[in-house]
Image 1 (cartoon, rainbow, N blue to C red):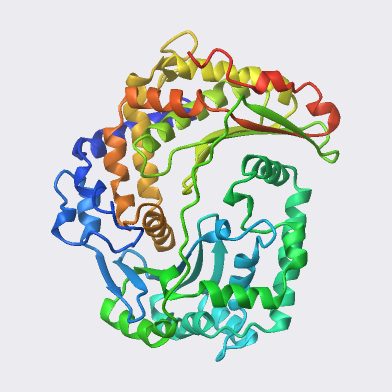
Image 2: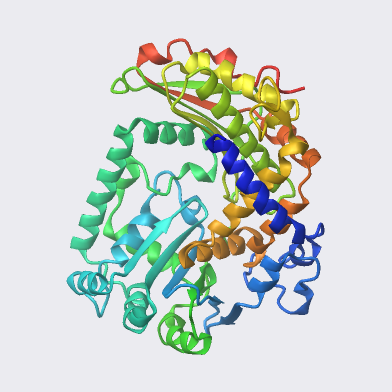
Length: 500
């Protein structure tokens, strides 16, 4: 039994145990956040129900407490005693999409400067306390939001929480701290430019997001970082750190009343109000698929290939079906492009989870990016015919099986990944925050198990035809000139043989 067969077999066992408890209706939870205007504590109470939900959702619903600080900042607390680590994040709506290519990266830069000092804590004191307690403090940004987080053991939480609060409410914004973090940001961007796989991603984003708010990358660009200043960081803070732009997610062994009192003393002083930030619009790419060649002389003998396409958001009915379909496609790519033709080190097909969502088909390290598109098309044609990789390699001469016959095992993998994504309190907090940002209901992620169980092979086929085979992918082929020379634009206009 090979590794893939063992993985499917284990997934099938998980599916038999876990999917048996799933209800086919998701209406109870799905309706909860609608009409909330994006407020993450919307639709509380008995209307949320629980009827028709999986045990996973029902158990988790009981672990939430919520409250609102006096200035209007919502706080979502999920009680979890499975780990002694406590996680708390301030979520700042907007992300890099709320900036512009000219100011890109300012949000990420500001959060990193905040973590270096405050009115009560200097940089050395912060580093000493974090090292002593093996804790972490800092900020990250994506297209839709930014997150300023603290991770620490419960026995240190009372010592670290005042530090987290003070760096938010009263950051020092010292020039030396800004200079250091700006230098780090420039070096990080230069490092990505010099790495062929990272450069492929940067080039793909530049083309795919042209004219869209996501064109402002979270890490910034060379021009925006060159123009950044401490004054621009302070201006961002003064504009965006307003109660109306914020909410807090805390996961761990919390006493909600005690946490509320502590947050009220610090974050409760943040001014009310905030910018009206619209969600990023869906990405649209009319016309045929396109190919851009990016020469990268250092990448001798090896090329990189990536194609992006618009995809449904996480609360769209097609999201789960397309995600399952892309997982099947990923296995087919591995079988066809890697195992059959030996044309790639690692292939990938996936769907992201942003507000303006997109999917990706990619080949990491291929010596024949031009020829490889025909191999991708071969795998896509199998998928379009309603087949995937058989659980038993001897099932058929070509190793393929109808999707209905392997669907429970594929679902089992997804159910397993859902539980694996609960492995840390920080990961749970990220799912809560994404649910609140994208759907207006912080509990929406709990639907995933139910939605997986409800997906049919017909749903998967419809989603693939609509969003993948009917899409116009934006492709990038990166590598030395001789490696990408035979990649032809006409071959990348569509998936040949896969659109019927």
